[in-house]
Image (cartoon, rainbow, N blue to C red; front, side, top):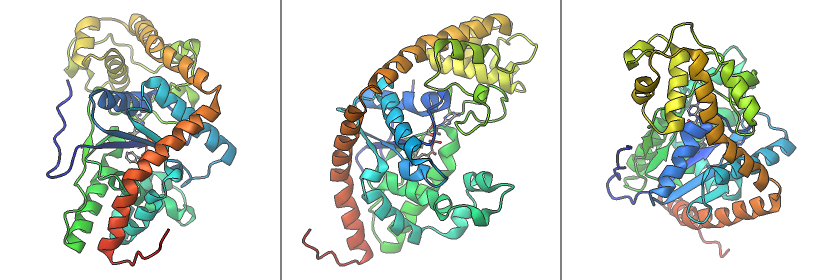
Length: 348
Ligand code: TYM
């Protein structure tokens, strides 16, 4: 069971999180983020979920594909259980408060903070960083703006976003300190469950990612049952049977990954998976995992495909979500302008 969320002092509990529509959603996105977004919504907490299209364009995106992937991600959210009536679901670029607050944060955050981000280092490794977009460098300031435009107190994410969330806390603290206010909450990351870091099916030491050149490395939310089963059957493993205790997985990243995926899909702990399957060879564990994955993911894929038949309805949902998001973020960002010392006399 997840720990009950603790609200940072004086701020009402509000959850915000986002996913980039820069490619199809993967099993990593589903288990590490989306499934948990649904759980938070179903706990009755106020939840705001965003398709961060402005983050996506920090690296080149084909405009036609970006629009399609944004709709597909929205369909994926709804198919996975996000209810647009209970959660706010929208795409970032429709709410200008994000870009506006990001600019303020560009002036609060320091170059050195950005330069230390491992994502920046990874994405520019072996390449001339002079050629990376300025947006890619400033990416974490926009991410902090996403969160703090709503004064969100908790952000469910996978393990890979931890450093960005620490930066968000640093930005909030520096803003509060620079201007002598207690305006922004020091947001808590919520990184929990068995699948906070789903690894590649081809290499258990690398994160499963939509940008991996090998499609065999990941399960996509759009994969059909056959493809899912085939990818799991071909997943890299070692020749040993599964251990009965967690300790036995220590130096076996590929085996550990499959056990964690099983646990997350079945809503049990990795220890329980080993209690049930300890001693089993991969020849029998993989088909059991494939059946489980197909039974969980299959209905989501089917529903997502059905929703994609009516893109006007998806656009309508995103539009409605944007109006609701704007109603929360606008007054917060207006207050930020006031704190910073800007004149707001227009009559718009
Ligand atoms: P993105 O789009 O890379 O991933 C979206 C979410 O999925 C999680 N995730 C994973 N979890 C477990 N295993 C994996 N292999 C895996 N791959 C991805 C990520 O941790 C994330 O929670 N910068 C963010 C998007 C963002 C955001 C925000 C998130 C922009 N603004 C504000 C939270 C709050 C990103 O690129 O996530």
